[in-house]
Image 1 (cartoon, rainbow, N blue to C red):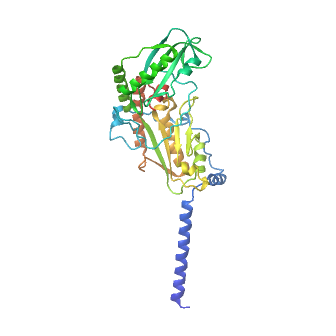
Image 2: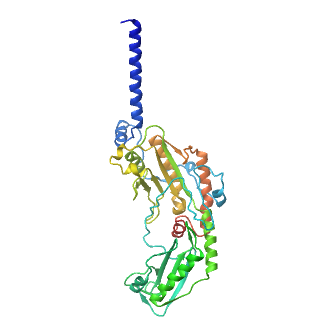
Length: 386
């Protein structure tokens, strides 16, 4: 064999080895990291400091790491709001869902006690009675649907024994009744047609139980609904950060394992984890979501995830839970542990300065909501911003 042939054979072998090595590298990169893989790595790194397995606690971080969130109505409407910042929505009669950075499935646990009608966000019509009425009679007369157009409708009774307004219950007696319809929600404000439907529905119920309704002025209530909707449109906000894989993709189990170390637990829907609030019935502080199809796959560990979303429903979570601080901490901790990068929905990395700006905007939002007696996380705020 000539020297040329030997050289060509060697070069061919090297090229073939290079192709095989490259294909192996590509295969490894496309294979999602699994929870088992993480456990094996942990065993090999047993001498290194262990990662905390408890839920995020803002008290464990230094004062320098704390961000006190802020935002005002003008900054919500500004086109110069940084990527990943708060998003408001339109005003007037148009539907006004907020514009989230990620799509959320709002799964909020039902409160232990249903919030009652409130003159702050409801039209209320008193229903006077000549005599007490039983809970059974009230329940039998209730309309088949508890909505007026796109707004929640409710009937409450004044419990003869407790002296409190409540939804009718069997075995109880009520000395007075009241009907109510919500002034506004994310579908817009109560309009004249919906008010008329409210009157018709309430009158039919009143006739069935022998009550006399006293309806407020329609034009005044519709004007009040429009003003409340305008306020809500300028102060409705959701936050969302995307976490994207730098190199190897993640399996659902890998994501769940790391998220559980920060206190996240599985939600009701596939591909959703939540960080629960400190009080029963409170909305989740944060949501983590990824492709539901990957979560429902026959072998989820073979599903490759290259991004997950961390979200905060600002108006649904009490300010004292420090939700933005915990959102930022969770995003940073997961990015560090899973070799990811925190970005906005367009894939642009979010710098510390941008996050500081978002945090700065939140404070004004909280202040404005509290000044209106619609503090974030309150029953009234959750109803209005839904």
